[in-house]
Length: 349
Image (cartoon, rainbow, N blue to C red; front, side):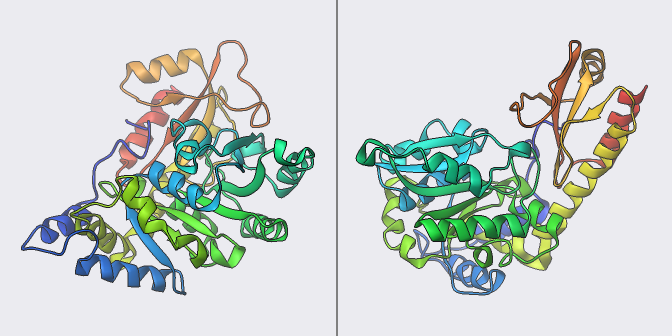
């Protein structure tokens, strides 16, 4: 019963098979191989337009390098205060931008709004004494499992365009958000004004690959150099590309995301029916945040359940009372339905 993260599970067998096949024979090094060329063309089809794609090994690299292409060293990036780029990347965005200011905003459910960004910018009244507003980063789905609607994303796109800002989407769980909304990749990205996307793959069944996708071609001009300088251009890049080729084949990526979301909904519904438990935020993708009695949490862990305690911002949820704790439960493509059932049985006992 491991609900610690969608990172704790292994590789989808179909993706592993593709990597084994890519291991046969020889191939051109440094992203010059045939599989990489096919994947670049596939991204054009997935997003219904020509895009610039660069494969990297980690989401941190994707986020930080995109922001470095958007933001000068004296710039400011606006994001939710609990976003991955704010708390979980060891200053990588600041490092690769050369020192840009990361500005965190508090919003319900892990979301921010254009109005929050506008309000913060309105305080920049001292010219060069303040950083120059340069970019906005939104996470889809958010760190609290909520999903930005197409209207919400489009509002950011319109706002960013009107202010001369660039819009980045951290799509570590892009597929989970996509199937939750029931829309196309194009609709959830460039058609709403997103300039660049960190296209997450690893959390949804890959061994380790993320894609940097530029919809604004002007941002991609020197990105090949940025990727190389960051040590993210793999000599055997075909093994990154092979993962994506299997990921897209027969819509495996959507199948995996739907399964993870479905199990999360079952988990949320089951917990919501237990009187001593309350859901901290609605379950919209593949993460469940619940407030439980400490005694229930201890019993679950004693019976083998693995999950994390969680601390949300003041805007996110009613704080746990004495004797309670807020927890995060994440489902994945490989989570067992039996584990969900067993977890609920123990919690409701």
